[in-house]
Length: 175
Length: 455
Image (tube, rainbow over all chains, first blue to last red; front, side, top):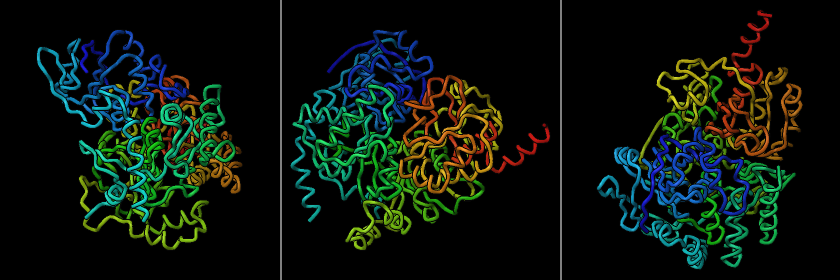
């Protein structure tokens, strides 16, 4: 997986999931259609999104996605066309939800985030685990198991294949 | 030399996976109407509607119940029909409440258990010496399908509690202190494990309030040791009362404790006797100060701009437009009793909403006449639900409306677009509702005297 795109900077720390998508929009029973509500809970969020309608890479500060467990946050980001979020750090549940939904969560040091924040575009090589911008390659880490869910999907299929193993484990634990 | 958390973790690992992940067995999945339908429908459509073990799932309509519109009615109905089809226990209108209130009060959490829910405040269940985990909808679907989750093993942040609460401080003030001390993201990657004599001084409801806000420090969960207080609480619950092997259960639970030489990855200490009532001034729960204090000089500009405050501004006396007592943090019987004790014989001066955490809490409160105290004071006494906490159904704030709330999140827009939330304990919310401004119960009498003198 390999894509190039425009960067949208969300220049705030602690972008919580209520800012990403307020609870009043969590009324669906499917994973689609949440993009229209993205960042509507963030002061100035709608205007920010409109400033770069073609952006596909989000760059953010510390603790992106904190707060609620709502996977709608990852669905809204994906639905709006974003394929990666680059941040100084992520909250745990958002990080897991991003992987599960094919949104690449990239953690980079503050200095690299600053550099990317100042440039308009980047190319991301997910398999090779680097961001290419400003004429250089910035490597990043990914969870090797969850990386496969980003590249190929298959989170639920992975677990479905574990059912017999889990049943055997449970029987052994009970005896 | 293992912590309590490590013992629970080790006894639930089914398989080690690449990259430090593990397949972790889940004893109970808690399923509510907002985050369950997508996973349930995915299993129905792609995995033959197979559920690992319906007896390990408990379902609740809790966030918007009764439904407020067609969409939320569909969510509730999907949960209902799915639960009925699989024979899953369902708590519904008339007998329901917030999942993190209902699951403990019915005895559906036990020490040593692993539990997950598509709800970040599942960490509340750690009060019982269990691993309660908030997860996304897809992961919850995975747990319903396969009985397990893929997890990175968290580190353990040991917090020693000493002394006991006094000076009007409550478990809420302790929970806020933990977030402020560790920082809003300071416990990311950790489970917070409480230990020390201070824990023993806390009731189960206080421990639930404490563990409830572990997520607000970024923690994977919060965890209290199990003791006689835990056993006495569970012994009175529907699912634990009168079980034939009760004594052997308690023996097993009693053995579930951190080793004396357990090693924590990080340690902090809090003396409960030093705590004072707090109130938040910012846009995350870690941004709080003592009520008799002020907005810090170095407070983030973005937080103050949103909240309409200035550095150095005093908090006591800040005018409010609404008050809310409720949420999975502070809507249990002891919370309502504490708030009622402040409101008895007084009258609120701003719109005040009191929302019990469950129908069982509501009925227990009414048996004690608490509903009369609230209503005599001019407050609205509602049915149980998540209520105004997340701005999803009733009690939504208008832009710039200022609400003092016993809930857990003061994020921008949390209780309504542009609304301003100040987090505090139920007693502080009650006192503030009477005064019409942020204040503590012990300052109410002085305020009345001043107001009377002025008149």
